[in-house]
Image 1 (cartoon, rainbow, N blue to C red):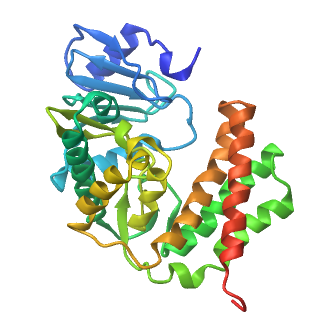
Image 2: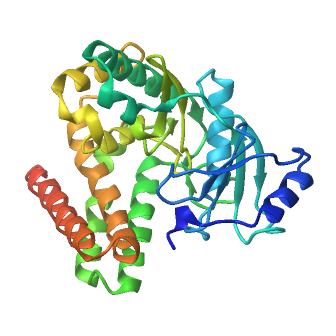
Image 3: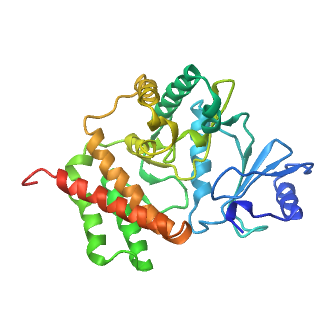
Length: 319
């Protein structure tokens, strides 16, 4: 049984609702939204999500912090009703938020006229810039319970890559020499990341499948569980290979035009993307090995090597 199709006993869900004074349950609908976390709509008003796969990660603590910050900044996001990691009723973190109107933008774009597509790309750029306008005092994870909080962005990347390669070493899917090469490129990138002195809220999984729209307007930004505080340009790594934004240069241009109404990209944008792609890809080596099958795992491994080689090739002589 896949994670997202897990079914929970209605009495368990009712008990959680009673505990948090959310009233009786009239209607339960299991959603196919979300690849990983089981997701249930209650009374067409609440969304209940359960962190059943990555139980060791405080994903929903992260998400509730991000949602609260975005809500106060006037960004359209669900309201947090309950964050429960007591494990009283289920051995998992539980997040209950309001159900937002609309269908996911990715689906909507299949039938939307070009004009509407371009408007949504533009609007999503503006919204991302608004998210990046939310400042933080530390770099790293948002969850209150997390120890991955750092004084510098450089340190977050270095420590993060070490954690990612350590996971691969434990699984026996990288050798120590490979792991050391991956960590070393961040160690020597001091000059590249030195300029990033203030942390911003970063969505960290920003693409059209994580937004809702109705009548051509974006109604909600969803799935903030991987959010961190860091360099805003870290968010652009997921735009380079996902959905419509890269299919057409027109969409990409509209997105960047929207974004740059509020923020400008740095002169180091292109080179930083190599490091950010590598960071993401090394994480996906272990995830794909554990969950997505061999073909996917081999693909990410090859892809990580390719990013690494591009970074090493781009080093200035004598640096």
